[in-house]
Length: 413
Ligand code: HGY
Ligand code: MN
Ligand code: MN
Image (cartoon, rainbow, N blue to C red; front, side, top):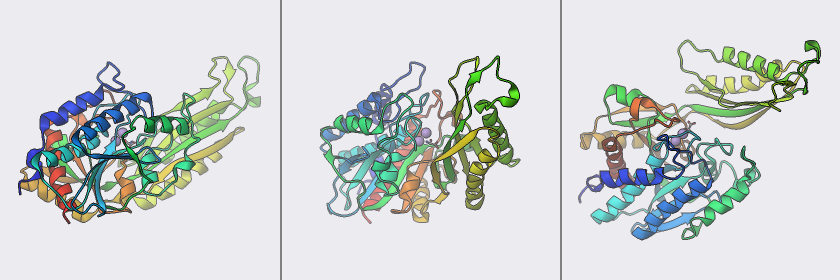
């Protein structure tokens, strides 16, 4: 039997990236296609159109996860899944997530072109709201699919523009009317996600594929500091309940706590807003986000706990509320999957290495469900979450070839 990898069409895969890139294009080379926006729905509808044109089955679940299914000879066998996300950062690139969705779809098309059958069904997946920048938390869709959370817990969440998740979810689901409704979660026999590395290691090593060993611990919080608004010209300093000043004390203490000479810690404050935001009014409220990550499970857990303690200890005359958006412990991928990715890359003469993931991915939620792994390909200078994000068509196709053979092996096991 010919290998699935030999039917991967590099040009088709690239052209599909360029077609999806138009939804939310910023005109500066990047994209703003945040989760559950009209543009997100349009990208999903485009993929759905390609899928139905191929005669693949389409499903959508209560979290708006979208599944493109190519049936196997054993229709009821637990499926093999592969996918990622189509939603992007507000100033994002055209490959983060998109590559995982389109390479999985390309595998289905290649199998079709080559007339290659398989035992288990194979599904390409679009996970809802991986990025979590419009609606918190990220990985909403894969969290619901894996049973970690129910979608009901998130329905009343609001976006900075005032939208409510419940409404956006209904509108997005309605944009793929050919998709049959399915309850979240189906039996899965294996999952592999392809993704750009979002770091510089593969490019620096001159390698094409990363056989990913796991994902570091990741956590995100929203901190709300409550003080008292007042006149900038009249309220004496010692009487102020200045939310900005208290927030800065917390931020200073947090940076001190997470300082790391080995540069392993990843600590980011991505959003910081003072209200009412008037130059001559003492801020009565400050809201800021914390993103903390580390690969060591014990250090990660201990520092997650310290974050709340540090904010409380530096509140001064203000109140503080630390809302945990998500905490995901470090996760190791399945050794058999990692080894198959390495072996297949070797068989295809594609230079590869094992590596861990600094970025978070939906794959982390799949680890408890089934043998799970990831395939990385380089992105230019490791740049991501940036409109300059770029990847090479030959690298994208190489990763898709490894994915094709790895998924086919899983589907025939
Ligand atoms: O933040 C992350 O790691 C992912 O790219 N959303
Ligand atoms: Mn991603
Ligand atoms: Mn991302």
